Amino acid sequence: MIKAGVVYHSVCGSTKTLAEATADGINSISGCEGVTFAVEAKHIQHGRYENPDLMHRLDQCDGIVLGSPTFMGSVSAQFKAFMDAASERYSSRGWVDKLSAGFTIGSNFSGDQLNTLTTLQIFAAQMGMLWVPNDILPNLDVQGRNRSGCQSGLVAVVNSEGAVHELDRLTALYLGERIGRLLKRFSPCGSI
Ligand SMILES: Cc1cc2nc3c(=O)[nH]c(=O)nc-3n(C[C@H](O)[C@H](O)[C@H](O)COP(=O)(O)O)c2cc1C
Image 1 (tube, helix red, strand yellow):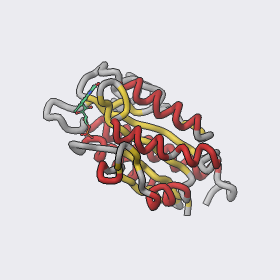
Image 2 (cartoon, helix red, strand yellow):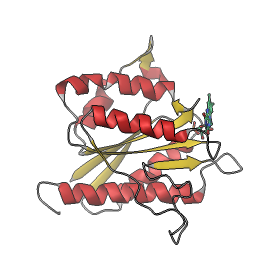
Image 3 (cartoon, rainbow, N blue to C red):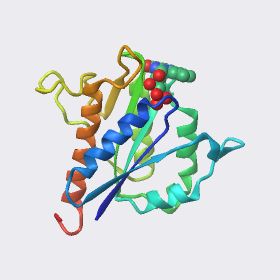
Image 4 (tube, helix red, strand yellow):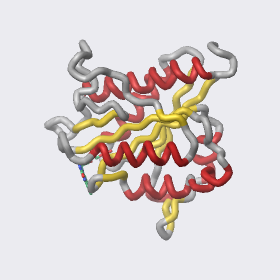
């Protein structure tokens, strides 16, 4: 079974909803298993994120999708603490060649979410992971997904009730499917 982890941080639940949709997309591809991993503040002591179990379970994934809310134009402090803790894997090259992708959400249409996504993309590059962009063509998708028009990943914007917009949820679902399909294509067995 090919495994992909979706690691995310969420305070009010919108990033969690996107993470679950991404995992659903991965799980919809036969032979693939998508699992969500929440970064929780309780694992941050004196500014350092420590959760060996989560890190160990990510080691065993073939792909790692990254999700953070946009806070003050960047990843949340909690997600950054997780990224810093992953520096052990930077030195050991533990996550090299895993597929990666990312998503973020903000309350504004141009709330600097791209900086969050770029931060996730650079993190993936530092780890030697292979970044999978969002290939949904904005404005041409019949369902209207990728409504923010971002190709680097999913940039979501909360709806008028402060919840996840259905089209953003569908974009996250697609991102998961794409990761699953690509993992299968690049798996040593070809396809399963
Ligand atoms: C401290 C803080 C900073 C924020 N900064 C931004 C921002 O820079 N751009 C933006 O579009 N939204 C910003 N927001 C809105 C959040 O990104 C938005 O509410 C998001 O849905 C929260 O994700 P969550 O529901 O997973 O916690 C901010 C919210 C908080 C609490």
